[in-house]
Length: 415
Image 1: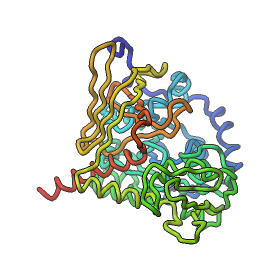
Image 2: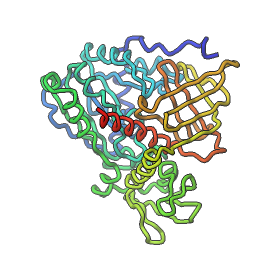
Image 3: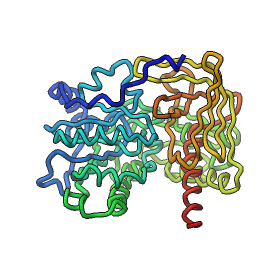
Image 4: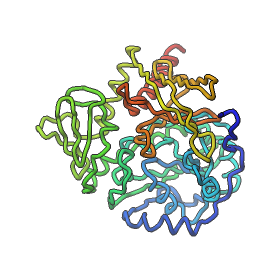
């Protein structure tokens, strides 16, 4: 089946952005409705072409970006599912297709064409929405990319987009008072003179953010009545009794079904225990505690997940192809997905030492539940555990990052 399907044409040259008045008319009103203020730092004399790196929390990111760079043209690196059923439109507005977390030399050439056209090349280096409004892992190749493109590097950090529409509950919470900071962290001369390690440091330093801390520090109220719904997808392990996969959320409440402990999510985004025995009040602290627990499993060489799964393939922008049932193993060696394609066995392996991150979805498209998507240069597979084995795709994401870090930490020690 898949052997005969035409793949997405990654080599098709990016188009210069069209429909700009339409894009502005769709973006500017929403930016205004959230009372978003955009501050520009070191941007004097900085004009296209340049590389713009933006943090990624919600679809609102694109709209604030459009306002920030007005009236200039952009080309955006977008995941293949963004092109689904609308490839022509996405190309017209400047989309460049990418399969997530793959080493894609074709993409680098496409980005070079954008800056050669004297336009802005936009990249979301976290490659996914942040799970809890804090910085996701960044690829170490960013500095080398900057050196290759030889244009200024600008970082746009938004605050409050996760509070307004968190990844676990993407409905518009109508939060006002959002902010964004657009900073040139390296002009062209600096890009040419600095090492890629120095550029990487500047990028990583610029990408430190925490939406929940920003919310509290700035007294940003979110009175959305269902603001905690879906939070259990991120906070999958009870911080009181330690039980995994038995958390639930509803309205403004987060609860452990195993021990019964319940937290209230306040209008300032904090968690307050109903029994007044606090564990974590700051959501990112809970998330990082979960990471530490996963890291312990990795360090003790016992991390393992295995389950029957449903497999959907996305070879192009026309639609998903159901590949039927398969098996997913995620362990100390990385990911291994097996299924059959018209009777022929297929095996996809993503070694832990090559996979620094993975994209996950909660209740993807409202059809089959949570999934992890695994990518090769030619295909994207949406993999849905069947639920017979307790699981959390958030834990898989954390484990992927920790497995990668442990491997390379040990590698450096041996050198």
